[in-house]
Image 1 (tube, rainbow, N blue to C red):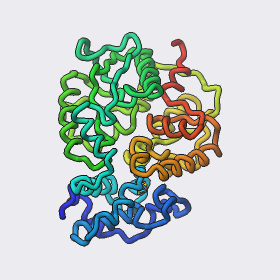
Image 2: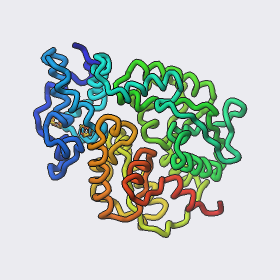
Image 3: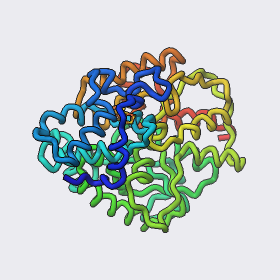
Image 4: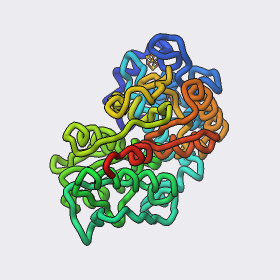
Length: 376
Ligand code: SF4
Ligand code: SF4
C-alpha cells in the first residue's frame, strides 16, 4: 500500500525509536498527548501512529477495524508533531491514515458528511452562512480593496466567532487598512482534510484559490489558525497568491508603523495557544510579542505555553469521533489554565468555543484588542 505523502516521511518512520518524546515532551516531564493521557497506550500516540503507517506501507495490517480507535481518538493537536526529535511528518501521516479509512468506507458517518456538505453547500457543517461586516469594509465582488480579511467559516455561523471577526475588521479599519471581505467566502476545508477526505478537500482547495485570486487582493489576513495553517501547509499556492498574514502578526506590523495605539488592559489574563500555531506552525512567539507590545504585565503566561501548550479538545472534529476525549482534554486544559488566571484570552474560534463550553471566562484576541484601541 502507498500512503499519499509516504515519500516525505517513510525514511523518518523507519527511524522512530519509541523514544516517547511524543508522549512525555522534550524534557520528559509532562504528558503532552491527550489521547495517551486518556487511553494510556503507545499505539494512541504519534509514535504509535507512525508504527501503524509503517505496518500499512509493508502491508502488515490484516484488520483495519483494530486500529480505527487509535486513529480517530486523536484531537489532531500536533503536540507529537512538534515534539518528535526525528521530525516525522505526523501531520500528513495521520491525515494519510485517515484517508485510507475513508477510502475503505470506515469513516464515522458525521465525518463523511463534512466533505459532502463542503462540495454541495460550500460549508462542511451544512449551515447557512451570513456575516454582516462593520461599516467601511468593502464587500467583494461589488467593491475591491487591497487587503482581504478571510473571516473563516465559523464567523459566518456562530455569534461569538462573528463578533471576533467584526472586532478584527474594526481594528483594521481603525488603522486605515483598505480592507475587503468576500460576500460568499468559501471554507478552507480544514475539517474535511482532518476527516481524511482528501479528494473533497483538494477539489474545494482549487476552487478557493481561484476565487481568492479573482478578488485581486495584494495581501490576505486570517485570524482563524485552522484557516491560516491549512493555506500554508496543505494548499498548493501559486506564486501570484496574496501574501498571507496571521491577524496577530498584522496587528504587530500596524503597531510598528504607528497606525494603532492600545491602552493597557485593566485585567489579568492567561492565553490559550492555538495548537495550529504553536505546534504545527511554531509561530506562538507572534502572540507573545504582541502581548509584550501592548503591556507585558497583564498576561500571566501559563507554564504549558507555546510549543509546550496543551490542546483545548478541538471542538471542530473530536466531539464527532470521541466525545469522551474531547471533554477529558478540555477539562485538563481548563485546570492547567486556571492556575494562571481566571480570564482566558483565545485566538481561535475552536478554543473560544471549547473553553467557554467548559465554563471559563473567555475573550477572543480581536475583542480584547478592540476594547483597548486608543483614539477609536
Ligand atoms: S514518533 Fe518521534 S517522538 Fe514519537 S516515539 Fe517515534 S521518534 Fe520518538
Ligand atoms: S495529534 Fe495530539 S492527540 Fe493526536 S497523537 Fe498527536 S499529540 Fe496525541
